[in-house]
Amino acid sequence: KPNLTVNDLHVSIEEKEILKGFGIEVNGGEIHAIMGPNGTGKSTLASALMGHPKYEVTSGDASLNGEDLFEMEVDERARAGLFLAMQYPSEIAGVTNADFIRSAMNADKEEGEQVSLMQFIRKIDDKMSTLDMDQSFQHRYLNEGFSGGEKKRNEILQLLMLEPKIAILDEIDSGLDIDALKVVAEGINDMRSDDFGCLIITHYQRLLNYIKPDFVHVMMQGRIVKSGGPELAQKLEEQGYDWIKDELGIED
Ligand code: ADP
Ligand code: MG
Ligand code: MG
Image (cartoon, rainbow, N blue to C red; front, side, top):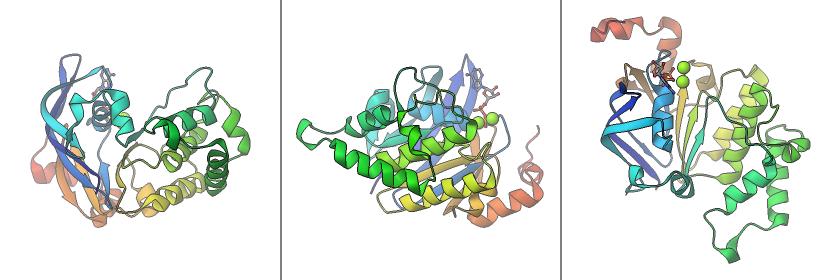
């Protein structure tokens, strides 16, 4: 089974410590949700795990399927099955969506076992219809001129096509209307299996109405301060974060 383990992670941006002892274990078959107020370091966690150069890991460790994550190059992490959907996906000039996805699918494959064009087309047509996406998206340049909602949908398309082992989805629900939200949730629910573990980062509870997480973690001030089941997300939706701050004696 796939496994992502993070231990006592400390990460700084420009000398300022943002993650202060973050830990989690995500296994195949599990969907974890991380919720927390703005500015607590949720996106920092995602970027640090993917190896963004701006984020300095000062201590702690992380492993992907038993291998030291921070010893792996960024593209190696992806080839080893780690997928990141970002809060602010970037544009890549001159690369079409289809080209990008196909080369990513083939990145970890030997010459002889690469996905053929026919297989690729069949699969992308199928996944795009699941996601209610217009076929023209295949031939548009990656993220160029995509609306916020289109970018999100497109990231879920990448997820369904690449079939990663572990996915980190940062605010995948931001800027989605309710129909798009349902489509995105359906896509993620389709991925559920023992071969897939998922970490959903979200500020709002609403996505979790459609994707039922096995574990919900609350992050504050750079670490997980409380964990529970889906009922924890419900309580946060109803009562906000203040009761946790009170419970733990955390000051703003
Ligand atoms: P969240 O995703 O939980 O809202 P972030 O991880 O985006 O929080 O931000 C955590 C803290 O780190 C904030 O104080 C933010 O201003 C700071 N921060 C995040 N990214 C950068 C960056 N690239 N440069 C400088 N500061 C950053
Ligand atoms: Mg934020
Ligand atoms: Mg964020």
